[in-house]
Image (cartoon, rainbow, N blue to C red; front, top):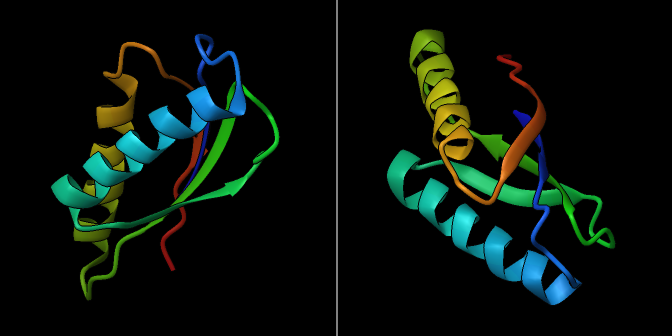
Length: 88
């Protein structure tokens, strides 16, 4: 899955990294997913995350990835700009 996020309150890369690190940790803990910042590393307010869930059931993977999107959408200071779920 690819997620493109906006953090309007970030005024520096340090602000962005603090928010992103916390978000990644919470996603990993709640959903047992691998998550990493995969792009837009030098932009203060834009975040591109990649997330992966491994299972032998496609419906489980889809459910977990959809749950991650919903979790991020509930965040106060982070806005989901776009996302793409790919199951392969």
